[in-house]
View (cartoon, rainbow, N blue to C red):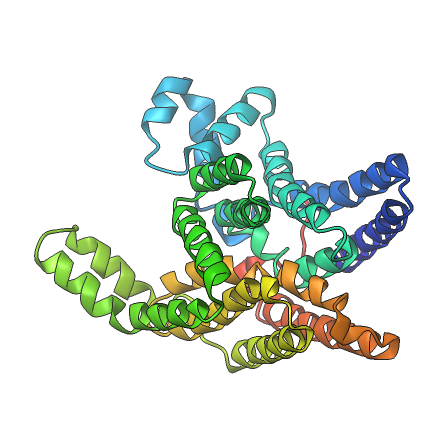
Length: 362
């Protein structure tokens, strides 16, 4: 399969990039990293527009619109996510195919993730980050393009915030929000949660409790403010109508429960409070997974929190609790196995977001 081939080659290249990074051979690190990033971007670019549900929903139609109107007219048609569509317009000026845009979009997902992993290079292996990305998120990025870009910039923003680099944090948050407005709420939550848990780690429990309350009362609250005219009523209708868009699978729950158990156990055995905020995010991902039974809009929120496994799991692979090499190998393979089961079941078997089998353009 083309996916397996592309994933394997990219992972091998990332392995060599890690090898040369830790031996301070920067030129070779950059070279291998560049090729490792190029392969998944090329695969995204060469796919047929039928691969990825949302490509024919908003990418192709807006690309065709870009070819028909001048920039000011085109821009006036946009209500949100303007940076996404500006890139689409610019690529339409140099190419009559959406392939260039799809290449750039995938690069805007992978490079911020790569740079975030690089910022944590002393605590994780970049290879582990991308094994998890390919198994859990790569195929999602063929459809949920705007939000996946926002997820990567939100993750990078967190890295800057955790190191008290506030200006880059704001820039990354702004870029993510310009690709998907929902990113703004995650950026604000990162700010609140990181500083709240630095004061007291038990504040994370309060934040989890608030999240549960939001989930429980969200539908009634949105309906009430819609009835009072505070927001248009169709917002409530859209919120409630999307309940059946994404099936709440028992296998999905089982996989994410096991992932959370593994993360929580390793994090608390390691006893590093700096990791607890990342543990909080993965637990919130599980909460919002259950909340999908209320509305699949919670899938959107949960996706941001799920994305943080790309940091916390590779970090825990190098934790003191896994200092025993055989135990570390077994633990790694258990997480990778869960990722493989997820990919085989949801991508290959259920064909979520219409990304399997891969079909080349034209």
